[in-house]
Length: 120
Image (cartoon, rainbow, N blue to C red; front, side):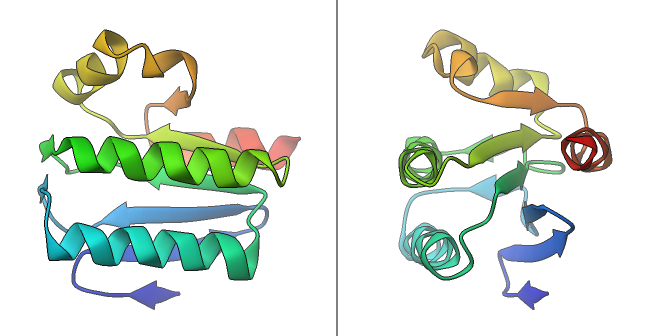
């Protein structure tokens, strides 16, 4: 398990979960760190399923969407998935408006996503 002041990364079976310790993910140095951290995670650990858990996150900047799209692009070359859980309805609307809801699978919470993904 890896912790920093913004993210928490855990692995359970075939699912690596990134969760956030803040309610707001805004553009800036912290998000640059998160982007590097996710890129390094993908390069070094090559997760089969990367679960991004937004439980507790109330706001995110467009940079967050860019990070998710970059992760999806990198993982698709490894035949792996990016899954989203715990997203509140207001943030889900951003995915819907931008048609990104068609690119990602969504689960109500991390545990239901992990349960579903580890059945496969």
